[in-house]
Image (cartoon, rainbow, N blue to C red; front, side, top):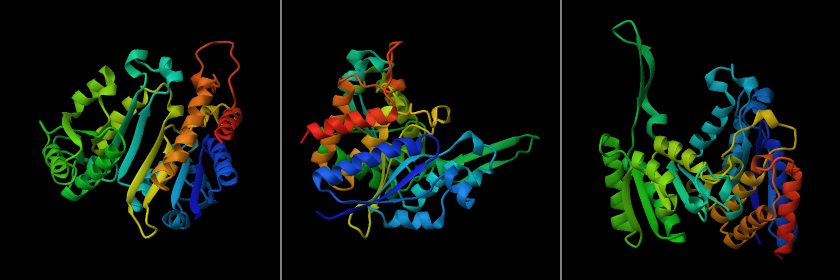
Length: 369
């Protein structure tokens, strides 16, 4: 089997701890399944700033362009809060997304049965939940011009951000959502604010055009984003794939994150257009942050990072059966009652360490042979 090149960027805080468990899982696939992965490790975020004075060095960016997939841990820490905005650790991640044109952010909201009681909603509402939110990631109000803060004519100031989308930007992320729906239950719900925003009108019209002309086999519906937020917490299992813009996707995916019980369980993928290597530029990372309060204590939950690698198996390498194998190993580990501190509800129970959670997942992988 052909080898795959992975760029591993552990980053800051608990990033190196959780990525160490991902590396062990990758090693298992190499040794037990004969899948050859070549790993290059580099710096991003605060770690890169400490070494190079920038959160993303040009050499690292070039390695990212050459990789088949990028695995990232976390970026950011309080020690860097006073840095100029342009060199804060998070800017490294934003630059990586922008330079690689990673325009489609995939955020699955899955509630494993063993964790249904950890959700902020009732078990009967979230049990069996499996929703995919596709967020446009490189345009919209976060990148539109003009933007900034300036004096107004009344002795105060005015802050301006511009919501801007083009036909091309909307159609390409819509296609990602429709393609995902073909692998799933065949339903896409597009969310915007077409009732009050011209960009929302354009969004709705262009997504509808893609559905009508390219994916007539997929059931397409539309919903205002505020109504979508309400429905996500009322009855989330009504959704299969949700596609939305950058701002609303940021908000809706974070709301959906709480349905699953813990940020430590949530993976993500950011995908671009297919490149010279025949597969899309792709960045896989956990949803959680760098968690400086537990760094170095063995308390971090590695599941989100491990599940992010499962997404890489599925979406970058077309190894769906191996992704299923890894996801099942995580689910079976949870069913056994193995818990890092973020997944414990009962006092007096000894939590598993980061490495012990990794041990349990590897044991289930071995049992799957």
